[in-house]
Image 1 (cartoon, rainbow, N blue to C red):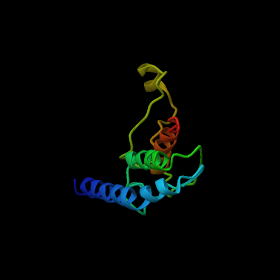
Image 2 (tube, rainbow, N blue to C red; image 1 turned 90 degrees about the vertical axis):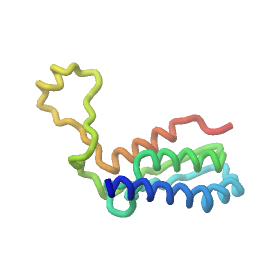
Image 3 (cartoon, rainbow, N blue to C red; image 1 turned 180 degrees about the horizontal axis):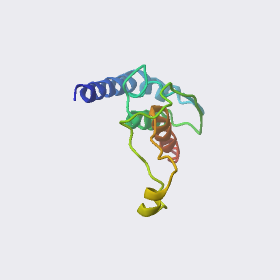
Length: 131
C-alpha cells in the first residue's frame, strides 16, 4: 500500500512539473518536427523513478498536443528492468483456447517495466497528430 501511494505521488509530481515547466515552452516553441528520445528507466519496476505505464502514455500525448508538430520521430531507448517480475500482469495469446493455453509448454509473457512502458508510449504515438 505504501509503495502504491508513493507511485501515485510521483506520478502527480511528474505531471505537475511537465504541465508547468515543459508544455508551455513547447507550445511557445511550436516545432515542425518532434524527436522523442524515449527511455523507460523511470518506470516503477526500474531503478530511477516511480512512474507507471499511464504516465508514459500521458506524457507522450501531452507533449504532442502542446507542440502540435507536423511529424514525430521516436527512438525507443531502454530501461534497466528487462527481466519480468512476479508482480507483472500475465498476458496470454488471445487466439488460443484455454485448453491450448493449459496444454502448451510455451512460456507465458510477463512484461517488465521496459516492455510495458514502451508499449504505452507506442500506443500513444499511434493516435493521429493534431491538425
